[in-house]
Image (cartoon, rainbow, N blue to C red; front, top):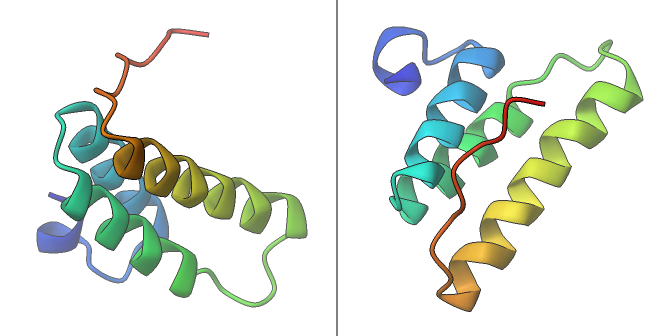
Length: 75
């Protein structure tokens, strides 16, 4: 979704990746999150960049393990 409607917006791509991940669409999740990381402006805070990279690492780890992604928590 994010890649279709806002392909240059890292937050839209991040959201699209999260939805794909929790729907079990690992390839889409990883691709969207990789694009989100790549499109972060250089001037953005390191903490935000780290959060995006951590999400990517989580998707890669969970998808490679073959585990079914857990539903997101509301916390």
